[in-house]
Length: 110
Figure 1: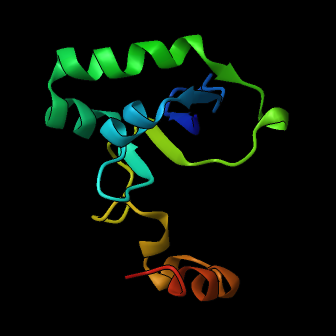
Figure 2: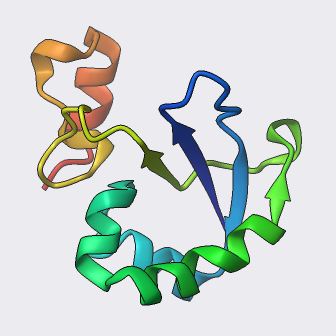
């Protein structure tokens, strides 16, 4: 199982974690991605298939304090977010992250 954090643009968003099977995770985050906008997911998979992938997640919430790792972030109502085109955290523009992140991320790009 992989842990996904949901970042909801709503003012009452809880930023909760949910567990996904490997197949669900691969459908949400293909090609090494670790970030996705739900609007892009629906466009890529279609509304019905996206629903089939996401619905089981809501039955697998996970307390943050009990999580062993965070594997992906799914954004809801955040189409205004400017995330890297690759949808990988390590690909943030160096001007937008601190020196320690630049050093860490540079070792994992490519």
